[in-house]
Length: 142
Image (cartoon, rainbow, N blue to C red; front, side):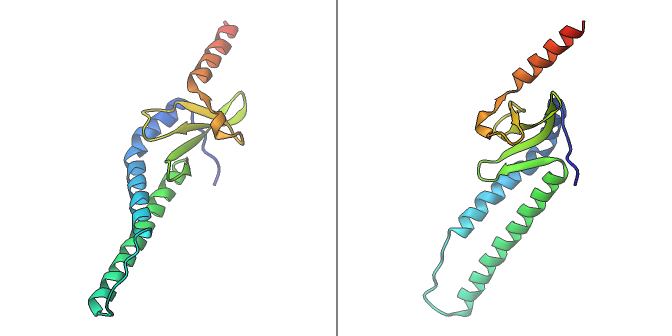
């Protein structure tokens, strides 16, 4: 699959569209952690106990399928889900002909940060810097 590149505005527009999917993805991930970390031991070998265990396993796997379906949908739209637990999502973009990643978290209303591809995400920079550099470049043309 070829990479989809977004401007900051295009990524912000997509965020509005995918926010419900991302919220659902986060919710499913939380539920799966809870189900995975819940250990139930039955005191008897009754049919009822076995059926309950089957139902819990079925629920876990159904949520996994739903999570990975949502994840696939987001990837097809050009999202890079970097961390499911922290729910960090990136979008490919370009700056000065170099590949960059626009960074977003669901707690943010829009893209606030970016970093170069392959660069430590902790070294992210403000999107304001991108805008200022673009304005400066346009001023030089005038």
